[in-house]
Image (cartoon, rainbow, N blue to C red):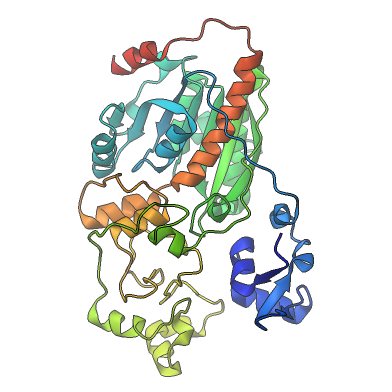
Length: 425
């Protein structure tokens, strides 16, 4: 356990801003001290124990044990995108028998990299999942966040009709997997004042699934050099007696240097690739921003002209005109690296991250190729679940299934080849 944590490290761990920490300093919630060696402003670990969501950092380390699957566990994935979640689950030991995706470029990406995967391109509402009933262990999907229109205190299965979550729930109903896993953006907890996620839990409960209290997982605690957060919803089939434990967090936080340079994550520097460029006016602005800096590092008149009306609004808006430093994780990647309000500038060069740099920040393997125009490639990567985060979730799922099948007396488990025949039919 470290004795001291910097302002940036604490902001990253808590998922808040440096400005918020400074306000907490003034209010007495936190008490910064000076580092005994370099005199930097830091926080003592004893002062951070109060925050329950990072309490694991101050306990004895627990190793997240890798468990190979006892048998070939089968999965179906909806809204598969460019394969972030699918790759992670594959690395954990799951074998998918069907991936559904509507975007043609994302489908081309999946087929290019995994020609043997059964990729169904088009509207998920047109897929009949009944042939897979009782023949898959896991069903996953990163359904978009949509509001429900319903009256009453509980949302029923039919009440969700018309949303893409309904299609996820329909696939669960028709296949009856042991485990279903939904993932979404952190904002799902606040969407419609919490009614949306409550409705999702209600529907899965109606379908016979006990939902583990949904949780936000911070990617920086799962070997991802990025401050991305994802909500995971895990449903366990009630008649199976399953027990699920969330993946164990890592204490070490990786940085952009770990992503782009040879070291802990990759055995070589990032390969060269195409990337977007800033227009001349933005480049002139970004050249003035130091590593780790943002628009407030500009001269005051440039701050006003660049931010326009946003200059007078509250909040730090630290993602605007932001240059990432080598020694910090990247801010959450977006689908367009050069647009205003979401700049993610390279630490040394005045440009957005390239496609391969984007992919590494999401922990994609270097040999994973992306199809489509440059804008589509950025969008596919920006929308993906980080591979290492997905792998951590996959390992937790495998442990759950191992426990189930090690206690199970059933011998009627279908062979993987039989499932592939069903998928091809």
